[in-house]
Length: 436
Ligand code: CMC
Image (cartoon, rainbow, N blue to C red; front, side):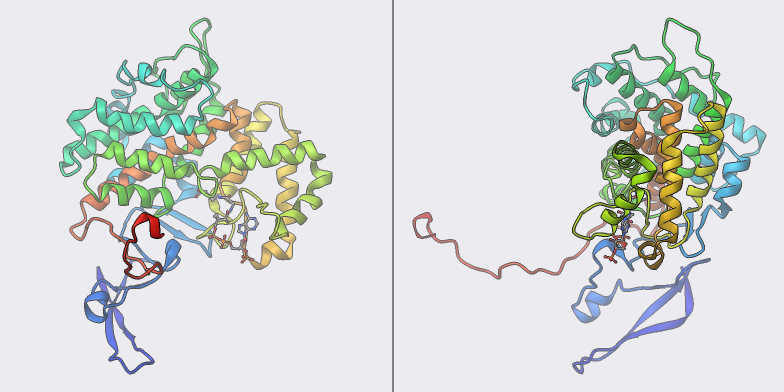
């Protein structure tokens, strides 16, 4: 880390001596105050629940400027990647820091496609779930179970193990998500088809069946690939931080990624795409666009507990750049499928327009996030609502593994072990049960 020009001085109002703290600068973004020696020097911790002001690591993978609404993967703007690259090129970039050339891409694609099948035993493991199990419950189990199938790549301190497990996870996630779907639909699993693109193969495993020829629709293939690119990484979000914390104990990569899947499931994070589509469907049932005003009043009423799902973000205080690209893709897909008048898309546009003009949202800088339109695209593609978050997990796997591998390679890495402000009872004695 580069020392910044300034030092921070921490002074106390009770006469305790002040201390100087080093300040470091990144290549862009806010400087950080290094508080690692704070406890040794003062006997005090810092207090920051929810990490509102805490940088938990240094990273060179993804940069977000929340005020500008800017997202860069390894320095490249998301708009350029979504327009000029495909998902596997983006994976190469996130994992190895460079966009591949033609030969490098061919090699990487070959390495990934060589690993798209999963161990045949996996289907028996899957069979233990109820048919109506939520796909994220299944995914948490299946991804964790990979560590029981691939014993030769579980040593997180071995760079070759880390690399092969990264490739395996990226290659197998679409197969696992499609298997979870086929299991719930009561249809036979479709083996991966390696002549297809990454997104095309996922569509094939999801929607083909052994009885008929399935032809991949190029518009849907491109839309899905864009969904994958837009969700590939997002710096230190809740699930990525979970993967880092879980992996910091030295556990195997599959276990760490399973922890990320579990965290992503929540409606404040990856589960928002499912929650957003359910919300749109509920408003539609209530009366659609005509009921938007009534719904907005509920959202603004703090006692109602109703949130406008797909709106707001911890980091973006401007339009999420991914939401803009997703809205564009949404239009393309609906036009290609002859669904231009899709009532849920119209409803989403009406909600967005009202929210962007409403004081409640303007004052709090609440804008649409990536999940606002991704559910409409996925639904148009034919992906069931309950599978949306699993598709997000599929795409985010590369980000998780890139961040995990970066952490393990960082000489400053230590097991993650937050501190606390204890507010419970001080020491007391246990009374015999008859006297309690
Ligand atoms: N609808 C209504 N009010 C909201 C919303 C919303 N979607 N989001 C934030 N607010 C209000 C919140 O009530 C608070 O108001 P006040 O200052 O009066 O108490 C203010 O805006 C600040 O919100 P916050 O909850 O302190 O912000 P946060 O950074 O802790 O939470 C968030 C961020 C994403 C969890 C939240 O905006 C939210 O729950 N949004 C809906 C769920 C969603 O769309 N999540 C997907 C995030 S993007 C995909 C991903 O990365 O997973």
